[in-house]
Length: 309
Image (cartoon, rainbow, N blue to C red):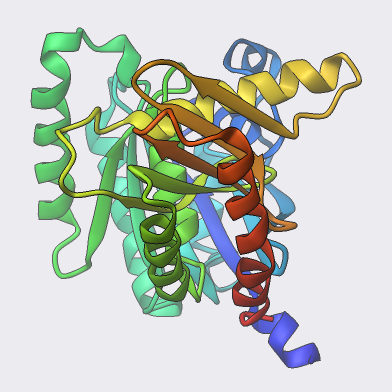
């Protein structure tokens, strides 16, 4: 119905001071830029609107708000109601190397009061960005300090903080969490992914959104040893780069199989809006069997996705 479709459009505010990296991260996640190409992006003037389709029927109405002081002051004065009403998610980006922290916090708190006034139910995410510029052994400490300060200044509002950089997988981790918070049937997807993983006797099954390659959901065998906590986002990053390389050569990425004596990994198109990755620690399972099982599950997962429509 028309109403159902309207309900699936979600307003996302992307805010932060000028040159904090907002447009660069948006361009990498949604416009297929690679990190080094973002250097040619200019400053955002006022508000740039874009509509991004995610998982088919979820439309992110993305407001990328320029961070120059003149614009920021306008957002909180003459444009306050227009900018901050009906917001589903506020993403506030902080440049970790900013020399004007107090001013950063001032604008952030102005945002929070505007959100509290106009969109009380909005989810709030804070990205401590450009973390690659901090020495590796200092990153945990710097992030913990910023997060504590942001929580203190956010008073009663619930916030989620991430450290991010356009040069590694942290950007994918943050944006996966943000976008998944807007997907209405994620618990149902999770339950069915767990069942599929058990049927496959898989170590892990991961669901990626088709266009962005953000992680939507995953199911892991809890009995297996500790793994790299960032493995899914690293794969998102690697496969997205590979997909872009394919596109430049007028080819389309469809599937990939990697196997050695320890495991077999399959990445394949799944539903019309997703890719799936299946990891099997038994490399003796024939490829044909694994791929057949993935094919058999497709229709079932298409039906689950259609329940949000």
